[in-house]
Length: 189
Image 1 (cartoon, one colour):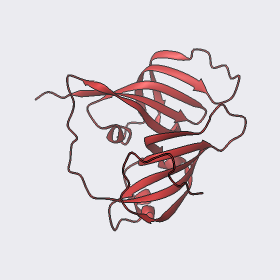
Image 2 (cartoon, rainbow, N blue to C red):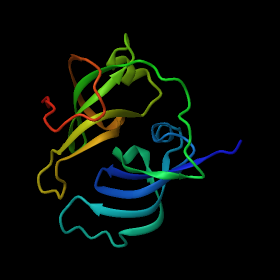
Image 3 (cartoon, helix red, strand yellow):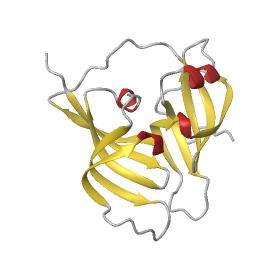
């Protein structure tokens, strides 16, 4: 049995720039970013500074590494077909309850759904879990700083660095949310 490598086209929102690139892994993206290694390897990297008129120099690289501590958000742009076939998801699925949250994380306000195992409190999960990146779905993101080139955007799935969260507000319990929610979804905050 061979290990199958998947390729993910990702956006990495760091503290002062947006990076587009490709990540190769035999694991799910969520598992990859939560591994203990301090860096994420990226191929075909394009850099976009947040500040208008910022000159970074070389804005395209064939390979680069980003420090996970500086990552605020990571999203999958689109799934690219895996090299050598599609990898199966490892592990069993666990039933979870959906909650609507408002997250403020370095430069961004994020309205999203978070999914928790019944009986697990969010505070306990954030402080005790080994996960550094919190998966959220149905996310609408707005920049919180003026004079930036960033605009509001929406993503079906994203990973938020828990070390970058300055505030997290939890709304009332909602029924399970389908991943394909419409544009009229209620925002909190």
